Image (cartoon, rainbow, N blue to C red; front, side, top):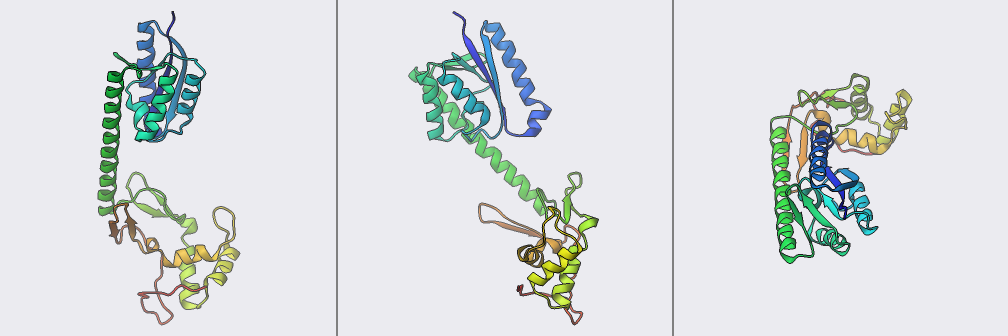
Length: 267
């Protein structure tokens, strides 16, 4: 009797997909399936977190399992399937077990109807989750260290762009007028957020083609980012503030020509 197999491959990021992982997994699993004399009936993939059950490829895999289209799910390592929390892992195991589908890795097969096999599978899942937490901690440490060194990451207000080479934020010349004009209208001409929004819209709409709003103006008056400051608060409650890390755009001058140390934003 021919054994039918579905190959399932997964990586967490586009970077992994483009550089190496998916192609390497696919090639090794194809060769292994052929060496075992198994029939490959489908190949499914995800470029997504292993901690989520709701993924396009994994959903398609469970549908195929429930429709009786495969005997084995072949993965490069069980953690491609199982970096899930306990309830979701139990659900996935139940779908496989109820449909008599085994999990195979090159060199081993796990039959979830066998208590010993299932126990080993659960241990692998615990290790995979622990490894995931360790990776997240290392990534978070790296982000904090970059921040302390004055290097940002991620998106910035549209007046800036992030230079991936230098790690710094750079002012976009075509939008650099917005903050000085906003400061001048607020500090020198004593206008509120609503009339400032109208004035800005008269010059140019936002990059999305919409009119300026009071909320957009208020954010630009109060955000530390436009003073050259990066400040981020992490899930642990720790806040890191680094000053003078990129070009400031705020005039920070009051009508008397003095530096403005604080401003009460009104509309």
